[in-house]
Length: 109
Ligand SMILES: N=c1c2ncn([C@@H]3O[C@H](COP(=O)(O)OP(=O)(O)OP(=O)(O)O)[C@@H](O)[C@H]3O)c2ncn1[C@@H]1O[C@H](COP(=O)(O)O)[C@@H](O)[C@H]1O
Image 1 (tube, helix red, strand yellow):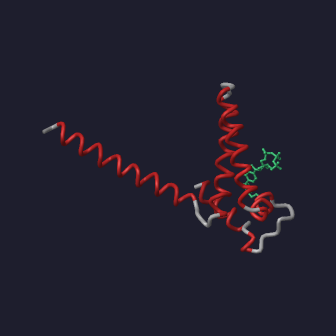
Image 2: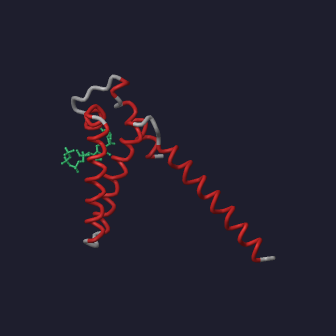
């Protein structure tokens, strides 16, 4: 899946892997550190908001791709991967599923 493939590429760009920042946007950004990554996340979020408010669905897709990409760089900075976020979403699905079942059981008396 694209998220895991991309995450593997991003991990290979980590300074700890000896990645060369020359010619690699990601290696350069990871080397600059957390503040630079967070600045990009903030900028891309704002651009996404503007694309949405302008009612431009194709730009929403493009800006969201930029935002997701920079969030993946942030995960890499923290030694995390997309699977960690997906697991959290699955856990919440499980939690809300249980809540739904409990409420249905209560309705049925
Ligand atoms: N998906 C992306 C991707 N999306 C966006 N970007 C870069 O993110 C930057 C976003 O910047 P902006 O839109 O703000 O434009 P900008 O003004 O040029 O940005 P700055 O130089 O100011 O940061 C651009 O330089 C884009 O090229 C990406 N760079 C890389 N990838 C993937 O990451 C992989 C590794 O990239 P490298 O490390 O460059 O080899 C690539 O193979 C791609 O699959």
